[in-house]
Image 1 (spheres, one colour):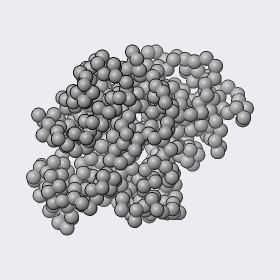
Image 2 (image 1 turned 90 degrees about the vertical axis):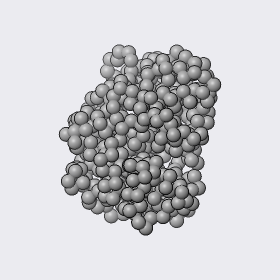
Image 3 (image 1 turned 45 degrees about the vertical axis):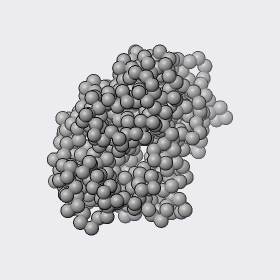
Image 4 (image 1 turned 45 degrees about the horizontal axis):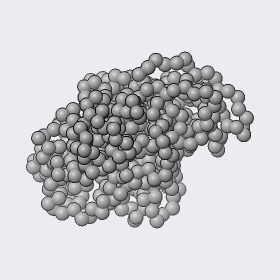
Length: 523
């Protein structure tokens, strides 16, 4: 959330020759973009001041105005972050600097009269890595195919954005997202967008961020629709977040206060997060299910920035005026098993440990899963329970909560399998990103399509993704009926898309009655 008053609304764009590129005047100053294949593209526009120095660990502050015309040709630098997750690398090549809080805009034309729907992308990365400039998030196909304006943004991750520390507001990464949405509200008309027709969309931690925004008073009125792809079920209680914050600071040899941590270079603090992540499995007795995730960051239910969990907030009607599209992939956890080299190598003991830790009811949950899947191997049980706990059931429950609160939700499941590596990865976590963006030679897609070409089948599914997402952004209808708790209507995204009852009925029943509350501190 931007903490000082807004300047006046942006003016109409200044004329610019084709050679110079389009110029748009924002609330902070003029920016010049580039014309690229029928689009006007602007990169690296500051929406807030660099959160360093006196602004370290503070809520975002409005960007300082500039004179003249600023070149908006290159993505802004990524926030300090982890090197990767189980083999998934973080940012390899990116600009350097402290101006982490920037937005990028793809628009068919920066015409204030156009008032096209606006889609605002929030990246994932376990709340500890991510960059809007990643090649896999190139939004040109979405903007061009859907005739929409697409905005992507950077937000603080890791200790800078999510560690719970004394003397700093909680959920600073979420506050960055709110500040970016305020920038959109004030500026997007000049880029050809409609500030009253904004859709936020995100995947994994980005979907958890979208779910959080639906529950936050500070985000109310900043968007009309929301798309959450693979919502994580991990939200921290304040006690748990403070305990993890103390452990993070200890890794850095400091006290868990903003004053102490601000004495250390932000990039060095990422090392503390990585060091603790490697040790987290040792903390199961204290941190419970969170420990094996090796991710010491998540939104914190602090009672102020984030008043309660998204499921509780939506069930109480917090987002009944926001249209919701939510779903998950069939084989979510497969990605992490393959990347860690554990796929097909899970022992009976490991399967039992996972079932008793993650399934509802502990030992009873272990027996229930085995009874429901009598022919499943240890690896299949291990994968299924973690797919259910971490992504599938939280996503389903978000649709149910929205419906219970008087709102409308549309549910989907992606079942089409990635062709790379002989189809080993299936419909794994993250597959929806290259399908949606059409970025088949970037980031994770290099693994998902390894050894294969992009077939007409994949291209057709990719086009269907974009058509559904942009239709939803324009009208609130992705092309299939809304979810209800009787028919459980779900769009299955595959070679031949079908509408059916929720496909994972076995898992739904196993988790019936379970409440996704803030993860508690056990010790």
